[in-house]
Length: 404
Ligand SMILES: Nc1nc2c(ncn2[C@@H]2O[C@H](COP(=O)(O)OP(=O)(O)O)[C@@H](O)[C@H]2O)c(=O)[nH]1
Ligand SMILES: [Ca+2]
Image (cartoon, rainbow, N blue to C red; front, side, top):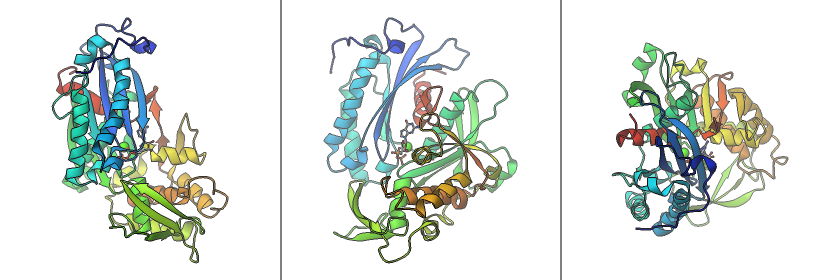
């Protein structure tokens, strides 16, 4: 088993001398389609009746994601090990054995063949086994898409204080990843439960309460997968040198792009149309009729993060650090501005027009939100990342009997 000398530096909130008897840790890896991230949480349980408190989070990430190592599983596992070494420094040595470590992969690995995904996961498992941490059964695996949404919902509603006390006013969440996207909310109307397909509803127990949530993960509807779908390249056997063109890209552009271990050549409509209108119609083909539209959400507001946040921040719709509040129509306005002036936005990503148009179409025509539906763009609440990983860590601690 790998042992390290007692490290000589600890961030103040995790210094072993300060670690109280009721302090514990949890390590959760998010193996996303575009990157792998480690979240090292410090919890304090002040009394058995209260929910645990999150005292701190250490967060670090590496790119690309595990799926980019589809043909080099050892190298993929190596990227996980680099991050895990941080946890050795962050968790006091006497708690290593009691600190669980788990990795959950999302859409990137869901899209790989089972054989390639398994090879990656088994290399990661070996890295975990060689570490001094607690390695529970099923510590490495692909997460169910419905859990991704539920656990992110738990995170956001926990951090905003909606899971404790009586008057719970929970908020719905929208997560836009690279390869998949999730929508999750707690239905308030009987009508919603009646008209929703059964597999969109899941009962989930957390902190001694059962929540019946509406949740769905749309595989292939993440921002990067949607780029490929718009280009007509998603799930295609790419012939060498094949060129994919779109009216959402700058006219003269010709370039290469790697995603999920595959190389794509793409470019603008040299002779044809470009701009918001043709782009909107192109993207609409990818989205139209593919998503369930619950009536109830039209009038409610949602928390949105991941690429919703990134693209809003990239275009100054929100502050990069503080986030902000937007309406759906703000994304549309910005998409028009960027798509109809592509030469002006040349220095930003060539996909900016396509990405903003996709977000607009997904919200309006996919989920059926109104132009004035309010979105709360949030990266962190109380300095903790709004990611499914915190919900997943609570779930893990609960299943290990470390919290109730
Ligand atoms: N707020 C927040 N966003 C994250 C975190 N990790 C990844 N993201 C965002 O997630 C997006 C990438 O999605 P990814 O997880 O790679 O793809 P997925 O596998 O389809 O979910 C980007 O917008 C990232 O900024 C996190 O810990 N906190
Ligand atoms: Ca994700």
